[in-house]
Image (cartoon, rainbow, N blue to C red; front, side):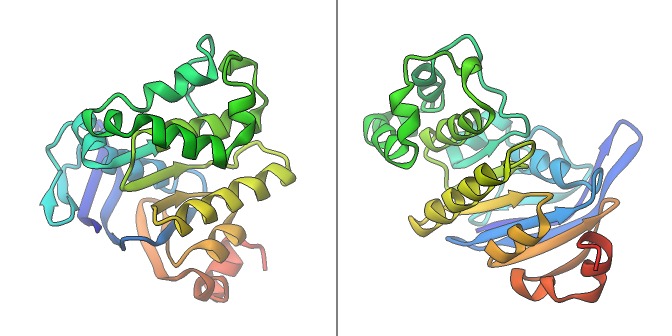
Length: 234
């Protein structure tokens, strides 16, 4: 469904990705893991259109999106939940959610999608009139995911969704990803919680200093000696 083909990405003269190629299958969870500054977020930014690769392609359902602007990719179905949530703190929960449904394709089914988001996160319906900035960290992450779902994504990209959350909320977010995927959503997950991410993922890849060093089934990578030494401390 989604492919990166030989992507090189730079920030000015600093190369961040080196010939990165990966495939995300429709209806699956794909986890991208690695240490800090490995290039995980840059990979998502390339897919979103926020970083234009110097070489290589981004392909969705056979269509080359490499030069398609970021806002048009949202309407094509590529939606990202950024690291740090990036909510509008002085707008209400409901207003933040409605902003997610700004594209023509999403507006058509806005009310139905909102009901789905409220079923997924009942606390958001309870606090729909509350300012987003006054929510707890976990609730803000739920609101950020809900806002992305309002855009009716075909590929939902999550950048460090459990960062800074208490363990009980980490478990809740992973369970939410599992539920969304069971409902048919394709998910690309960037996550430093390597063990849980690989347990959840159908397929996964490991980035190291901008290079793709391991790919395979998520649970298989958990038993890979290189990954265990580098990321699990075993």
